[in-house]
Image 1: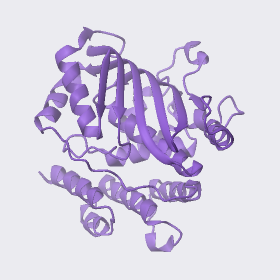
Image 2: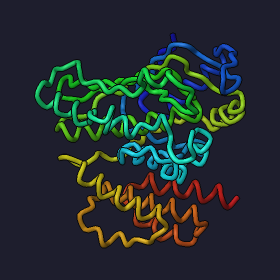
Image 3: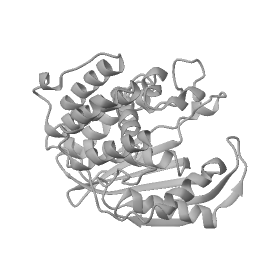
Length: 321
């Protein structure tokens, strides 16, 4: 059993990858050879320290894109391929991703809005232990699909006025999947905490098969050589109050950008500073995809959160090398 606790995502990733390289058992399942530790408990003490500060793992754009895919309730391939092109390998019909979390969050079995259900439950019963979201379903084993959820359940509890979250995953790719999962899930944790009017507590990530594929081994070793990234850098706090009106506006803007249209962010007067930064990152991502690097500098200067600016500069530098 691997048990690790850290204040930042980078601290956690460093120790996870080091443990897998040194202690992982060589296995060869369906998707290729890997080093595996079966049974892991990873604790992120500060869920806002969810973005990697390293050169190789600074994946803010794709992580934000995946989060918005979940929040939109969509499992459409064209949405997520805009941010993560490899998702096309996991579609059964070239249009959707069977295991996409969006419909499972918002319209599970065509009747349950699971996110709203747990918000309603914890609003009425602050000490409840029943606020559980189920993503993996028994029907996922009834047929062969190219993609089924790696995440089985999410549980939310309020303790001492703060929201804790625990996630159980049947399988987790430590190099590629884990950073995205922690980003998206801790963002969901904070969104729900804001909706409930409580503070943010620790995030617990339980994994059955935690693994590192052989084809990611050299990349993981390169990440470790970047140094122990113990910078306690955290994202700003989501503003108090219900965040869903802002999220819906961001989703509307995201769709406009993904459709190849241009926006003027100054036209969106209702955006708070927090969500304006997220939209600016979406704009910058669209410019990266169009290879319009000259426009990125002016957008970058509008970012309020300085660490986002550093992430953009790092990506520009890697492209220009």
